[in-house]
Each structure stands twice: as structure tokens, then as C-alpha cells.
Image 1: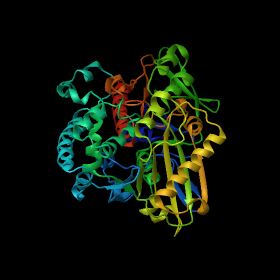
Image 2 (image 1 turned 180 degrees about the horizontal axis):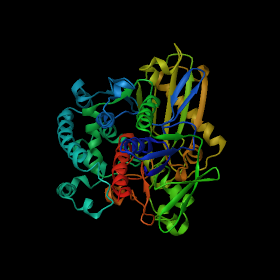
Image 3 (image 1 turned 90 degrees about the vertical axis):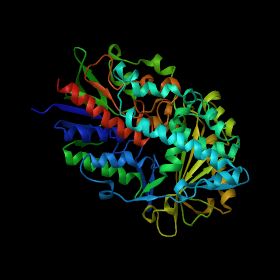
Length: 490
């Protein structure tokens, strides 16, 4: 008889794990509290506009392709990839710069900003490319459940370069002291849930991901990617149940016995939680079986939350690329407000996604969908006046830089903040990306993928290894499927 495995949450990590486990002969059921798959990669549709509500940067395409290859297929069977050229635009206080991959002449922008800087950036990319390949091959698929993973020779070899453990900013500063260049090379720390000051230099390999591998877009948006993953999992035999929130995990003799959904208990041999780690530990697991109680989480450095503004406009907006970064604010002050002062900001840095520049299917003809994201401190509870003031401020800054009226052309408008993350995803303090990748919260220092107290409870997703971001949680699904397969068979 097949072993039965429950997965709580249909985010990319949960779907990935479901696909691998179902392929390997397990009876897999995925319970998802929301009405659609994807976790944070859910889709909002209104009046002919389609918005990816979560991830919008398709990076590390090799990870996605490896997933499909593992099931004897390819991503192109489910969606078409387009390389973005240029990758993105950066607006500073008075200037703008377009950034492209190295193989498309992308180093030239650095010489424009600082003569001779291209050579320095090229040297950085040579180092980070080597580091990326090493980590991708030897470290990203470790579960770190066993102490042996922490003392593995491949992992220890990274210790030979001390600059990898100083701050991200300290490493980038050695490449260039030009602040505009630093911003281009450092902004991706937001995707690691932190700032250039609290994320270690090892993650500067993101410059290789950005400038060497390039930024891509899946036609149809991330919703198309989610459908592809779900389709693979279903083909392997996994069952998905939507609008089915798990409200309790029942235990017996140091093991999970049942999960409860809508008052009904379902028995399983193992459970994998793809839901918010804090929520599962403190709300679903009995207190005496919590590996990480509330006091543990109170000491952790969480990623920021965010304001997301989804706009459908009945005109074409000039001055924007598919991805546009707005660095026309106090760079250091912004990160200080988000991570140190934990205060509301009226002039944050922000990012604009405008996928209708690339994909005609996401907006009616002659119209555009625009998504604005401003990272904000987690745990805040802004007033309606504060929210409205910030939304108007972001739109005004967008209008000023594009030199076009947008306000009078808005036909769809949706705004979400901390409460959305907390209510929709049970996200602790409304965080957007899980735990920040500080030095003390990386690799073996992240929450374990297996419960310390319940032998058949496992975790997958952005709180665990390898970390935040869609490629990372896809890998976490593969890792935990291997771990669960080894233990359930015993």
C-alpha cells in the first residue's frame, strides 16, 4: 500500500515536492487554503488585465529547466521564455541607465558611470560566476539536517575567502565607489530579504545571476509557470485540494497522525509544511511539540513587508521598461527605516513591473498593466490616510519620471500591504520574503527542514534551505522530497 503524504500549501516549494514524491510512488495530497496554486505567485485578473501578485523576476532559468528535465519534458511545453533586453532601467535622482546582460554589451553602462569601472565589474563577475557554479553544484541541494552537511569539505572551502562573510556592501565597495554602480549591484539584496549592510558578501553571486545569466520573462507571467508546475505534479498523480485550510496538526507519540481540514481529520504517514513556518510551529503544532516557539521567532531578522499597487491604465506609458527601478530617494535612509528604525516611509525606494511592454496577453490592446512595489518595514499597521498618501506619492513620482499623466487614466486599482500577506499567506508580521539571509540565518543556521520533535513533520519553502526566491524554493521541494523519501521508506 502506498505511503500517504500531505503537503500543506501549494506554493512552488510544495508543488515541487509533490511532483517528485508522486513520481516516486507516494500518495500525495496538497491542501491549499486559497483558491489557486502558486503561494505568493497568485494571479489577479480584472477588466481584461492580468497581474502577477507576487514574483515577477524570472532568474536562474537553469533551475526551472532542471525541474522539467527531471520529468522528461521542458519548460517550453508549458510557457515560452523571452530574454529581456535591456534587463531593466534604473532611475536615479537626475539620470537613468539601462542595464543589459554582459553578452549584450551590458558592461558599457558601468564605464559610462565611471571610466574604467567595466573592468572592475568584469573581474567581480568572474569571481561570482565561479562561486555561483560551486554553490549551485555542491551546496544548494543540501538539507543541512545532518551536522555532516555543515562540515562538508565543499562547504568549508568557501571559508577560504573571508570577504564572502563581510557585508554585501563591503564587497561591492571594493569593486566601485561610485554610488550609482553600487546601487545597481546591490539592489537585489531586497530579494534576499535584507539590505546591503546585513546580507553577507557571498550573495553577491547575484551579480552573476543578473548580469551573466540575464533576466527572463515567461510569457503569460508567473501564473503560466505555476500552471506548468501544477500540471507536472498532477501528471505524476498528486492530488490538489483548494479552499482547504489546514487548521490543526494532530500528533501521537512524537509523530504527526492527522491533519485537520474544515473539522475533518485526515490520516497521513508524513506531512510537509509549505505554509509559513512560524504559523505552522506556533498555531498548528501542539505547544509541547514546537521546535521553534514564539520566543525563537521574536529574535529573528525577517524580510521586509511591502506595498504593492496594481494599476490598469487605458494608455501606453512611456519611459518604462518591463522592469524599472526607482532609486530617486535616500538609499541608506530607506534601508535604515525598513530594518533599523522599523518605521513608516513616505518616500521609499520602489520598483515598477510593466509586463505589458513584453506580453500583449496581460492587458487589453492599447492599455497597460503596471505593478509598483515599495519595500516597507514588517509588523506595521498604517492608517488609511498613510496608505493613501503613500500610494499617491508613488504614482506622482512615476508620473514625474515618465512625464505623463497616469492618474486620470487608471481603470483598475488594487493596493495590498502587510495585512494582505498576513491574512492570505499567514505570513509572520506580514513579511514578504520569509527570513532575511543574514549570516546567522544562512545555510545550517536556517530553520531545519525536519521537525526536531515530530519525526514525520517536514518543512519546505522560503524559510528553509536553500532560501528565498522562486528558484530556491523549487530546489527546496526537490531536497525535501529526497529527505522524506529516504525516511518514510525506513
